[in-house]
Length: 150
Image (cartoon, rainbow, N blue to C red):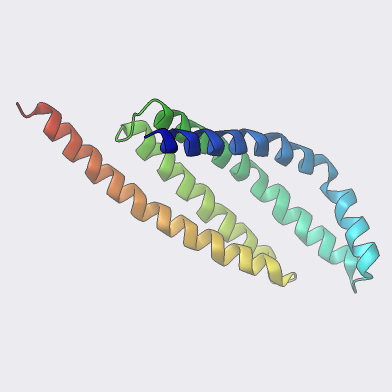
């Protein structure tokens, strides 16, 4: 149990660290991409930068939402509230965020191939989270039945 709390605390710290990192990238990514493509002398860098920025800024709200939802789930785990309705809802919204990112990256990935890889990964994670939602919902129902049983 001690190790689980430690891992949960580390995950919470990392999640809370990523929120300002994502905010920082929201302001500095255009300059970072221009510098990167300048150094690599990429062909059609302007179009690539534009597509990457479109994908990033379309996915940015889902990224913030996912980090906040993950923080809520981790807070519930720290309080040892495992099979509660809030966790089920958080995981459901996490899966929606992942599926949203997958679709957004697939739409812009035609021009920049690594975005297609991100899209496939996000869609896969979204599907996995949907399965986890079903499992959590069933576990919550069983936990509620057991708590009513004398």
